[in-house]
Length: 250
Ligand code: NAD
Image 1 (cartoon, protein in one colour):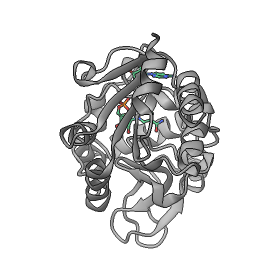
Image 2: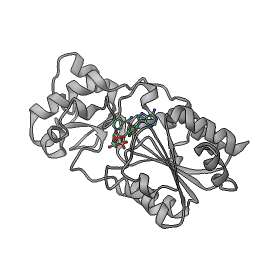
Image 3: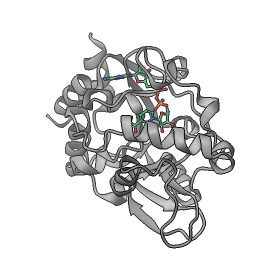
């Protein structure tokens, strides 16, 4: 029996699946992950980009905007992995998608906003840390490209920050609550494209497991929770997820 047929058999009759996604579901859309072989952390030191440094050092903000200008792939398109989850949702077998991703590709693929719980924010918008006015990120990046290395709020002069959670910054409480609620309600948790090593986010699949859910991991490479999974599918999410959804829905 292949791992895929074992997974299909285990999913039979399950209709309350929760997806927990990480950067690996978006690499096939051209967005690099963090810890994979070509990941961002092989090129950048994460301790340079903490929330404290962003708020207190103009030099960190300048570097962050430069990185955003060069690397934010805001025009990326969803891939078959994202589309497979939409198919599961439309069939009524997915209760939600908790994501660590900030790329908005689940929504672009067609999951409604209320189905996507973004634990680490969304890179498509930027907010003033002082007056909370918000702009589309491309508008702010256009200002950087026009020569403003550290663009400030045009209303109050406050610091502008892309709406993603930095190291040292709390995850948004309503999203965390919703994620744990879904973890309690699901009968399967599908962890997709994540090393499951960034906490507290990676507690979500563990909460589902503790609550009795079947734990399935789809990932290329090892994760920190492989030893806890009932089934591990090793390989590309963009191939395995459509196959799994196809064989589950029949
Ligand atoms: P991670 O980099 O730690 O792990 C990604 C995992 O996915 C790795 O094991 C990698 O080998 C695997 N992988 C890569 N391509 C894959 C594919 N096509 N199919 C299956 N698996 C694949 O990422 P993580 O666990 O999500 O780490 C969390 C942090 O990364 C979060 O803070 C998140 O905000 C951030 N992040 C998000 C994006 C994005 O929005 N797309 C991109 C980079 C980082």
